[in-house]
Image (cartoon, rainbow, N blue to C red; front, side, top):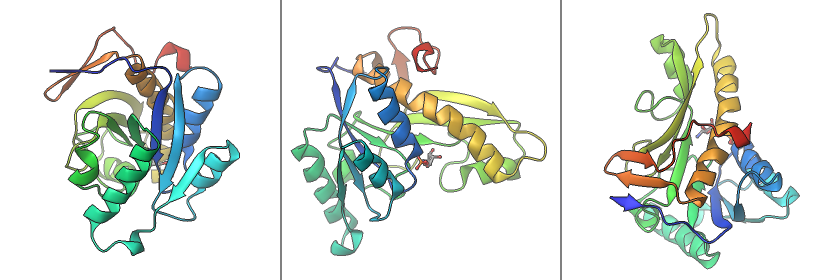
Amino acid sequence: MFEQEQTSSPLILGVLASGRGSNLQAIIDAIEEGRLEAKIALVLSNKADAFALVRAKNHYISTVFVDPKQYERREDYDDALLKTLQAHQVQVVVLAGYMRLLTEHLVKPFHNRMINIHPSLLPAFPGLHAQRQAIAYGVKLSGCTVHFVDEKMDNGPIIAQTTVPVLDGDTEEDLAGRILVEEHRLLPSVIQRIAEGKLRIDGRRVLHLEKTRFPLEINR
Ligand code: GRF
């Protein structure tokens, strides 16, 4: 059983993002609006042109682009990320649309301190194009999942999930948009729970020390 410590406030975050960064923006907004007791120490990306980096700069947050081409092995790349995160005293790593497989070099040091958001109700539809997979399969409900990260993709203990309906005639974009609204509410809520030390990890199960309906009311 692993009990999350209540961290000194604010919780220091490192955000890894590869793309448009709307989840990063949701975290920034929650912090700026006083709904989330955290500070983003830096935003790291494997893509030089990730819009997430622009969003971070707009809010005077440090950004680092680490070029995968400079590293022969994935492990070396992850070592470089690890050093950067440690240099910024990052306590919790948030994968917010980070489109690169992680090695244990990065996952182990942040065991129980790294979370990911995925646009499906895991364990259904892991991997790429989760929304497309959901429509093709014909499910009537989908949603998003925030989970701790382990060595396998989209696999670690689930912290919280939100559901949305899948409607007749939905395109992939329709469903992605509906899920994204929920992602932006769920992710900051979960980070706030971590900042408050309110989670306990028991094997695959994440227990909430206080009964919580996600997303938290305060994030609405
Ligand atoms: C989100 O749908 C997230 O669930 C997935 O990648 C997407 C990232 O979107 N992991 P954004 O870059 O945060 O806008």
